[in-house]
Length: 307
Ligand SMILES: C[S@@+](CC[C@H](N)C(=O)[O-])C[C@H]1O[C@@H](n2cnc3c(N)ncnc32)[C@H](O)[C@@H]1O
Image (cartoon, rainbow, N blue to C red; front, side):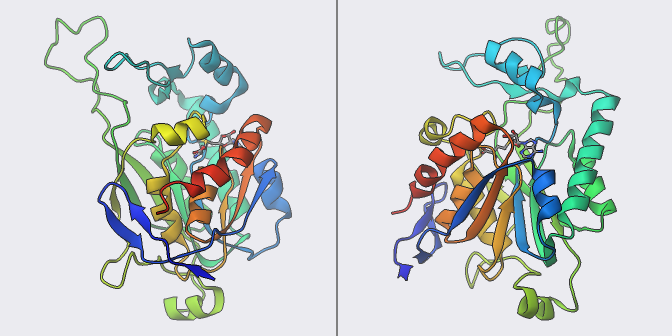
């Protein structure tokens, strides 16, 4: 049964979906993504939207421990703003060549493991960072995926913009690296079987879903930081906003048919977004703590902002 409630784009106040189906069914799995992918039948997933541990070290146990203790490691606590203490953000400038090699190995394994599981024409949206994106994208192309562009999520990420440390008075006009105002999400596609229309007929994949008859999916998306309400529901260190994720999950299945996968789901924000859009999805997480967070967060996150 199709519900008549609308899902609003809160940053622009306009309707993204005119009608919404009931919540999509979802499955949450406590597992290692690579082990899960290895036993998954070929051609059984129709799209991926994922925010992986794209610097990798930030989700190592010792780094998570340092984050909890509030000092040291890759997680940096940004200065207070308006009297409020802000959450730590990973500082990827500390990564060295061996970290980059490990990253490329991780994404190579991921790309080779997910390739057979996806149907022809399936799209992947994968979050990354301007400093690291080449280490994420290269292995996907080497595994046989086509790069189809990038989504630019316009958002102020609290990274960069600093003056030279201990020399800020000597060089008052210098910024060491740009203050980051965007987040890249790579767009990849498993090669088609035949033409786009052939692939759509056979597999329900090959393109991206339009926002409306008049408006195609676009690759620059104005976003905001994750709202307080969402952070209270899902206090994951890398929580992404529903507003943005609903646009990606809606777009990744061009006919709204098939299974969407998030192999690194964290607190399940992608799965909640897919479910809010009426899509069927599977989320994988290997940490018991975040898996349990997802179990409680998904029903609450998906219920937000549906008027
Ligand atoms: C960047 S976070 C995702 C956060 C998510 N977007 C959210 O809003 O909550 C990446 C997640 O991947 C998980 N992870 C890392 N390696 C994994 C693996 N091999 N299998 C499954 N999950 C993994 C981490 O525990 C972490 O929760």
